[in-house]
Image 1 (tube, one colour):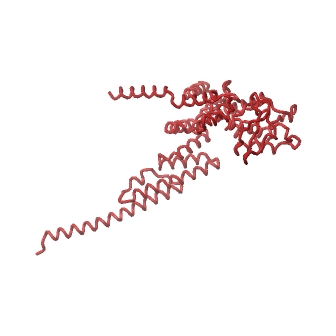
Image 2 (spheres, rainbow, N blue to C red):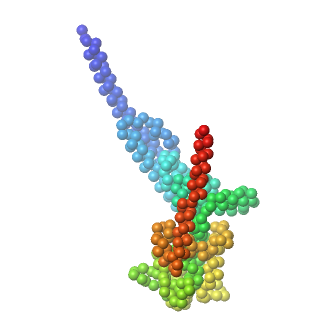
Image 3 (cartoon, rainbow, N blue to C red):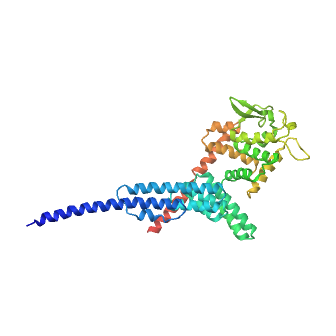
Length: 385
């Protein structure tokens, strides 16, 4: 007679083997299904983010699925960038949204989505996206610039439609966000890049001047005094010799990086041969009345102000000289020493440069933020009680 104990043991072993086979089958199906979902998504058919997550996870298939999901997100982001380059902003938005559905923490796709919404004139959505980005990364300067630009464009849109109440409300909202003057100056650079008609010598000149101001911290009078022959080579680098404040000769120089030199050289190529002698002004007038003559400080100030107005900024506090302050501030923020910033600004007294450093430190370590944090902590504590 068969022993029941051995019969039971035999059945258990058989069940274990069958169960193992089933597990292997499920594991295989999980990988196949996940891959299928990803392939479908990459061909433009959207699927929910929990599709892969809802499939059984056995062994190492979950880590492989996570890798595949991330790869799919990157592919969607790449497709979105291609649409963006082709100015197909609605499709770009769609691709970036799909990428974020797969990988909600994909920071690059978040920014790309915000920028696409801005370019598609979806200003409210862009503002919301950019605020979220800046909440997580307050030092993301480019995002802050586009947030300000989104506000300004939305204000223009509301005003054009006659909705003055909404426009005024948005203006107050912008004021409450306390954008730095450097943000507005950066917008002037963007305006110069995108708004100036560079198919004329005058347009190329205006961009070259603004670009030179922001990257070198020159004074307007220093630019007025420069000649074509003041551009020279020093130790293999292109420099511009200048006659500084209170100087009788051109005994100081600023480095012309590639980004600074290219617009200047493009402008000079557009100049008539008769106006390209070494002693001719680096930046000249192209008006009929004063053609070939040296620009004045007033002319340069007007060029800067006109380009500020291109982005809706018309403040008496922000001038051509603001670009000089911004250049010195940016140098310090980028890691330049006090002595290096002093050399850039050509300050006779280092205490003048120290003012810039103090202002940066004052904003970075503002005690007002500590007060806000303390009061928020009090509120949260009271709420819990």
